Image (cartoon, rainbow, N blue to C red; front, side, top):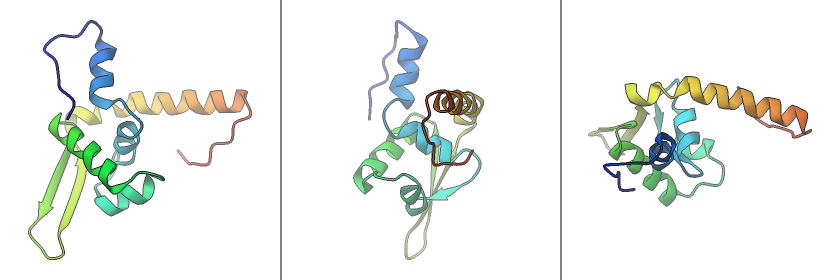
Length: 115
């Protein structure tokens, strides 16, 4: 897990420490309105390895942004969902998506996803 320092020079530095990287924002985005199992998340994140998804989910869980619920069944069932703290990020993620769509339109970039 990334170490959370006691002091940061800028609020964005803390944000990047918590949610930065290639996968964390995408994980949070996919969990924004539903509970997902590990395999479901992995299918949605094209190109992520099992090891990387496990690492990213653990870091998000350790920082209080994702909740992992394990059911005592065979085969194992584990679900992931957002905490109240991470749900507060959703409006910012929506704004970022809007900005990305506008940028893509202005620069003739095709986006192969739905909002």
